[in-house]
Length: 92
Image (cartoon, rainbow, N blue to C red; front, side):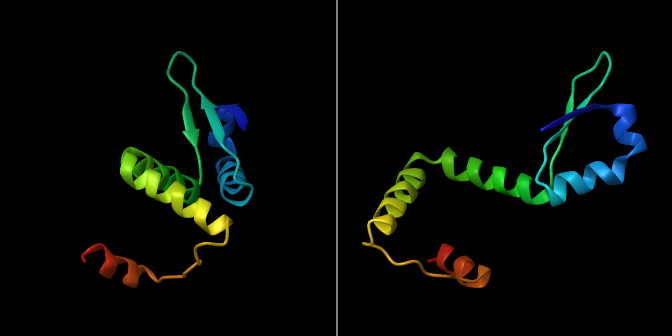
């Protein structure tokens, strides 16, 4: 994690964007007299949102944890699906 002030980020915006995207850094932007802001990559943001979605539903989270346990124990196979296949599965 990198913490830096607003002025520094403004003057070096591309650098900090590259750090967030290429190095998966979290950039905490401090602001005098105001709340701080966090800069993260879109991939990191999407990952956080996905995790929040899964964790929000206790039944789905339990199902995911059990599936991971079965996979690690060799009792469940890993299957790759396209987005289109998953969207079709969602409506069944």
